[in-house]
Image (tube, rainbow, N blue to C red; front, side, top):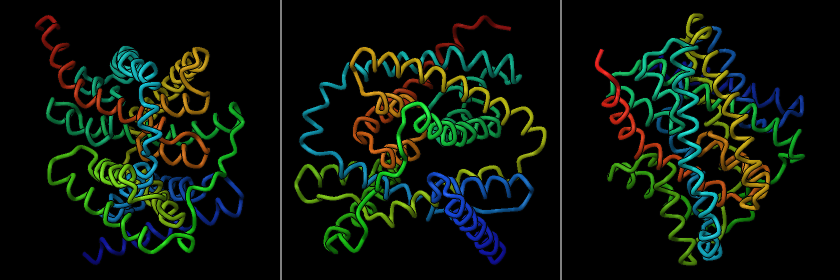
Length: 347
């Protein structure tokens, strides 16, 4: 226990140093990218860092409340207008699979099962669990998905700033001093009840989806009116960024050369595909450019929510599309995998 606490303490200090460096150099999203970059570099140097366990998971509940608080009667009224762009999500996922599975098999040398679950753009934890049950190489699947999140969080802001001309300086929320104590207590209750209640009923992504659902109900009922305070959202960014970097602890040079490099190349291909889909939804008037890009960039729910917040994009539009993607992948991937396996000729 002492060793674990020491490693966690070192990890937090390194992540804080990353924040300081990013603030000093005036780099974008210092509370997200600073911890991610510092933890990543130190982890690859072989330092035995350690995440904060349940505290890091709890950070996602803050984002869940922020998203749920954005669910208003006005948003519900806009859902029918999203149906056309939402209908593209399954097609988009199939296109990713058709590109990704052959890529990981032929370029990275993955076996068919590992290639399938490495290519599917679902949640990292969900795809790792499904892959393990199907007999995939769990280490390769998890590394590919962590790399997907890391590269997207580097590439997406660059595209937003340099192509779409977005300044990533939009305030993520009001300071705690401006919020009523009663409102913050409601948010805390929604976060805890949603997270733990979601885990109890087996909800996937319970830490973010549970609070999202509870706070959405409270928002629609006129009980919750504001997003979580800025300090809570910055703390969530800090823990999420640190968690991505810590995921690379123990990565070998061979894994860097094969799995991580392959995952990076695949994400760059996905960025091109996401750009093409963005052009399609933009030119057809289905979405504004920034919202279309963020909605179809295959990152994690938490990470894309942060980018939507700091870019001033329509958070609800972005989140609805990512929820649709995750649902389609989680529900469809095991079924599609079994279908593909049965259709393959026996060896």
